[in-house]
Amino acid sequence: FIEAVQIQIESAIWMWTQSSPARFVESTTASDRVVFTPLSSSSCVSYVGMVGGAQMIGVHADGGCNVGRIAHEIGHAIGFYHEHTRPDRGNYITINEDNILDGYTSQFDEQTGREYAAHPYDYGSLMHYPVDGFTSGSSSVSSVLGYSTTDTISVLDDPFEEFLEIYENDLPDETLGQRYFLSSIDKTMGYTYMGANCVDSDTSSSDYEWEVGEW
Image 1 (cartoon, rainbow, N blue to C red):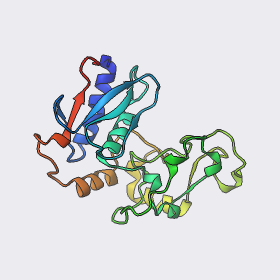
Image 2: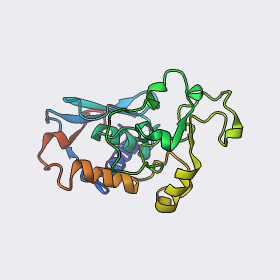
Image 3: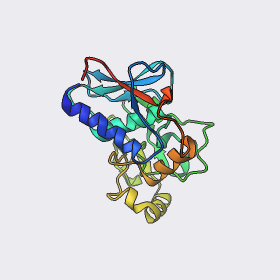
Image 4: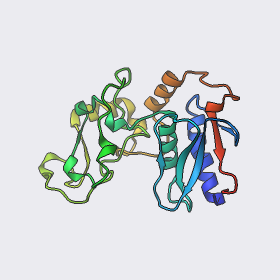
């Protein structure tokens, strides 16, 4: 990676280490590790959770992924799904399926059977899409419903207003899809599911690797 992208990756790692129990140890030998891998496209990609072996987090080689987008992908590698795919999402948002770009509907699939009830729905999550995430740019959805005709996600007003009353600092511009920090609920979930002392610094599953020769 070029130096600018190295700094982006290090900053994204810092977002997690300063706000959660997650720790990253540089390694080229750990049996299970994540490898930040250069991509020619501007996409940023990751598996969800540990898949074992040298696990890729794909990052645009020339800086097309900003720090927040890389942190979002690290969240996936740690085990976080998209917030807008929660099984209880229908109480908080509406997914406008007709507006989703062809080939990207899986990014909005509901994750049934997963436990989220202990934590409020988080409009401010680092793992939430913006309202126009993967929009096709055209739709027959009526603007009378209170959102853009091209939005893929629309919020339900009452729960959104209740969220803002409690967590206004997590969504200062009232716009979904922020990529600046882990929200209060992101942090709580991190400590709940990883634990205050989730890994030892010598544990291979907490390691990350810079690809040799790609710095």
